[in-house]
Image (cartoon, rainbow, N blue to C red; front, side):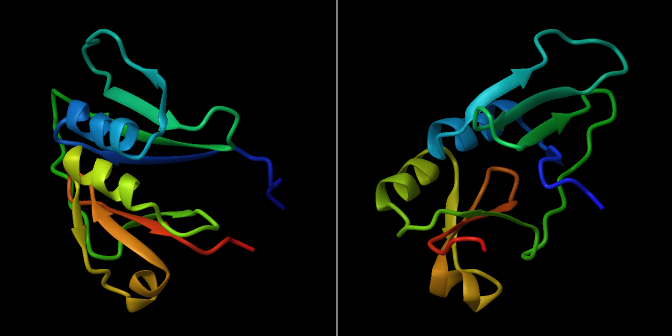
Length: 132
């Protein structure tokens, strides 16, 4: 059995770490938890974002020597269950930070939240429901 306190890491490749960081930090309001500060041959550049003390973090990676092109589908979702209505100001910040508001592939997410693509085309869902 996996302990519920186990830390979760979600990682995705990015074309442009600075653009992805703007979206998730300036737009969404997450904090930079860690980032590479110098280029090391054979290692990925990365930025870890999240909230301090959470049991998860979101890692954005780029391998400059062998870059991967992000290949998001309409069902690759990063869902945040807010437990309250989605703030239009947050949506405005996400769009200003390089995101695009889009209709959800699954109408459930339009009924209960808002979907915004990040600069790499991955979908962030801000859900007004709670998880439980």
